[in-house]
View 1: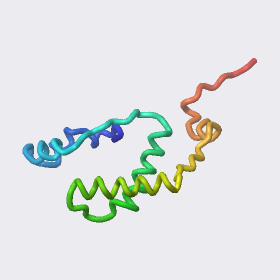
View 2: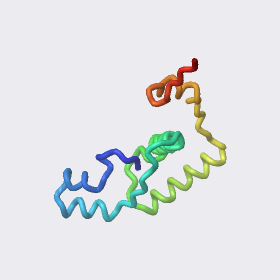
View 3: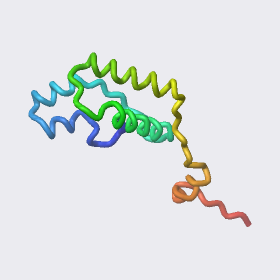
Length: 106
């Protein structure tokens, strides 16, 4: 999970009654990701593919979820699927130019 402010446990208490928020939190295992890094984008791409190909329906229980995700992962690995990352250092210098120092040579 990224560090967006709505991705904090406190946001559940804003959306639900305290008992319901606690019940939901007890079922979650939250793993925060670093704020920067292209691998985060790749992870989000993979989760999007997983969601579209495997989790696009109601799954009745954890055992079925584990089985379905495992089968999806095995097939994805068998097919050697990769993310085609095309954001280069040069692209970053253009898009994020305001973050790079400008050096004036005499």
